[in-house]
Image (cartoon, rainbow over all chains, first blue to last red; front, side, top):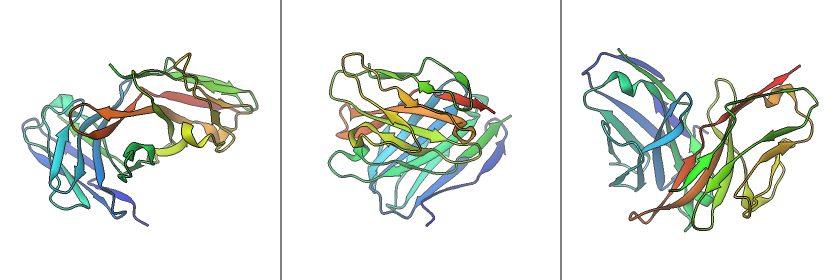
Length: 116
Length: 113
């Protein structure tokens, strides 16, 4: 049972570089999310998707873009990385059962990104 | 604004002592509340949810709507309970027809042998 898998696990970027983080889930979940985790800030929602082909902004979307071309994948892009985007990024997924977040959210193992 | 507050960044207790991790929330509707746990070098995972009224690994949490609290409790702490604990609230995300899970800033529990 793979669950939610994130790639890569670690990455160091130079300011201005771009990269894409991949999240893949094999549980046929409709909802997928990208969070960032910073010391003393908890988890903050960046973007989310309620289904294939749909995305929406979360709490801290600036500087990020996302795409959900396939139901099982949710990509997070940084077009021009900045030191403020140094963080640990978590992907999560959950079912849609009318009250989707009343069900369990499954998380990936995280991606540690450093922008220098 | 909907908000989850965990007032303690760090909580240290001795093994065998009672544990209480505090969580307060502000929400205008009917909340769904959860506790998530992150053990060292592991991913976040659901510990318990208020609607289940369950006890997981000896932990319980009761939703108190009058005090807008959802504190996590365990009568006797174990060393393996050392972890980061997040309180979370689900709400409708305005205008999107979707639901969002809002997290508190987390409390690091350290159980001293």
